[in-house]
Length: 293
Image 1 (tube, one colour):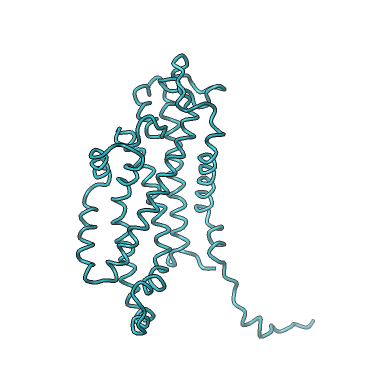
Image 2 (cartoon, rainbow, N blue to C red):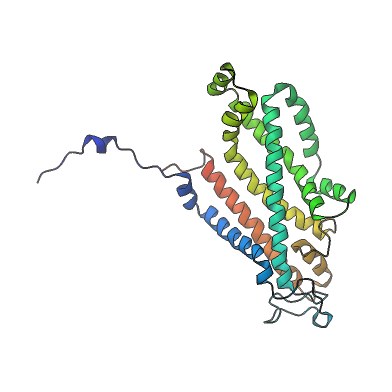
């Protein structure tokens, strides 16, 4: 029996490396979180077609009805359909989460890049960021809403401001490391302008941690919006949100627990799914945690 010796190409062949998308697909946390979020996005987008009745339509005769074929999630103290209100509440929660995360990442990244690279501005800018971080986010949001008219825009701005310093400090830490790299020093020596250096050499190195941070910000924003609405300091009560539904249902919770149960479960599932996806992305994008194949 003849045994063939391995060829030179076979000896030199390296094991095939799985790309980023392949690693994400192999991470169960990312898959589970993405599937749940995809379902929520579809429900929110199709809310006008998925709801059974107008979420603000009052039927006093059918108040506090238990879940049934007519009222899937029961009815509230004013006879409104809880299912329709939960479906429309998903739109508000997801919109707030995505908007707050986007604004916080954009503003925080800009501040972090400038503070981390321009030494003269570093001390001044970061002391302002430290001052904002010293104030609890909920208290700062309540104070801002109390000074202005309660609206969805005000809630988004009030939730975004406390998140900006966290992003700025994250980006600044990355920039402080990157600016000492030889390729950045070479770009400076060749006369490359500062905006181009930040765009080409510094910003790409912050994308991975920013993606992970963005998921946590979105989850925190969804939860904070519900807390503010529950306390009566968030979105106006006429707008169906999960926080507003739980705030109204706490008065009748003992006799109609479904008024809080269903919006509470939806809120918990949403925050849990976002955090799961964030943990999975962190494990995949962090070279110290990812399993290289």
